[in-house]
Image (cartoon, rainbow, N blue to C red):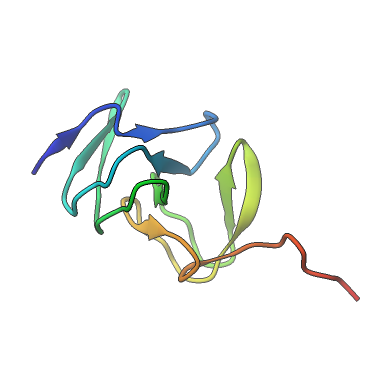
Length: 94
C-alpha cells in the first residue's frame, strides 16, 4: 500500500469527504492528521473520497456545507461521485 500525504485536501473540519489533489490508486493510505483512510477505489484527480461512513440518505458535506445526499451507503475510503451522490442544487420543490 502506498502512503499518500498531501494528496488530498479537506476544505473544512466538518467535511466527511476530501478532494483528491492527484490520481489516487486503490489501497492508497491517506493520512489525515491523527487518522488514516485506505482508498477502497481508485480516486481520480479532483474527485471526492469519503473519510467517514455516510449512510444512504445522509448529507455529504464539503466546504462545511451539505452538497447533496448519499444515494447508497458509502464506506470510508470510497469514491464519492454521481453514482452514489445526488445534489439538491437546481431541484425544484413543488
